[in-house]
Length: 363
Image 1 (cartoon, helix red, strand yellow):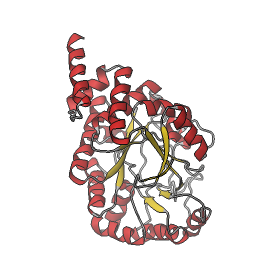
Image 2 (tube, one colour; image 1 turned 30 degrees about the horizontal axis):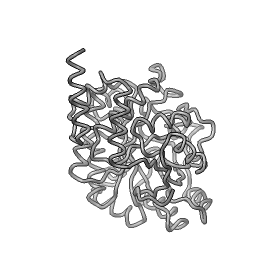
Image 3 (cartoon, helix red, strand yellow; image 1 turned 45 degrees about the vertical axis):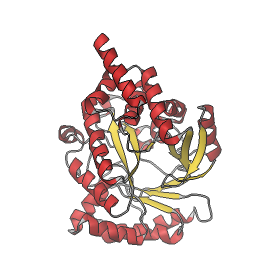
Image 4 (cartoon, helix red, strand yellow; image 1 turned 120 degrees about the vertical axis):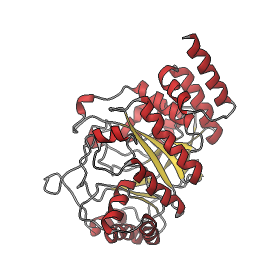
């Protein structure tokens, strides 16, 4: 125990001096550090990048389909082509959703869904175009690396070509979904047929080279170990060292309702907080850490803010089913700006509206 205390003290001193911690030190924080120390170190790292600001944006989601050629064990969202709960929006449907936000103060459209087996690159371009035509000034964040990898392979085009075409239609950035846990032995258990870690990282690297920023995620709290989490974040940190293209890291909690891994249950809040803190401390080259409230629960946001999260996503406006179908607790997935601001103020921080590239728009 004494030995671990000395090691933890050495890690704390490293963090205080803004020195990078290595994988073995991150593992020790997961295994041995108490929550009080983690909160202190994560807050130090967070405030070094972001002061006392906690960021939110005004966004809405479009989920074009829940029909998916993959059948990941953790997913409560996937439906096959003939399933009665399957939906596939037409381009008119998509334009109509975007049209609702004309003249509003929304700044971001977030478009992500299942990997539809029949869609090609032309269709993905048409989706972006449908939203861009309705909302010329809104930032379009669209399509996970898993969706993109499949459609580029399906069409026999390079990621560079595919991304340039999407960018020309109005794609501004890509979300971080589909990363799950990179370790092959974990993917074999939870998403055996989906894009590999290398393929996911390859799409994001190509996006960054094309001037398209992106986010990164990690799905935690299922069959993975702490070592798997650390290796996952290390791969993201290494790519960020090379490209600088990741805006934000988003730990996503595994939710157990309505999927094939439900028997595992869910990790407690203390584990969520431990994970936020270690992520914040380890990922020293990604400025922002997001607590995604539809997954975490609104009531837990102040705790996440105390453990290193400086971004609480946005208003969302009841436009996502990905987490509600997995048992996310908030009955209505929407928050007003004033409710978001109040949560942040009650946590002792300053609420700031941001755009999708993390530029502050106002307080």
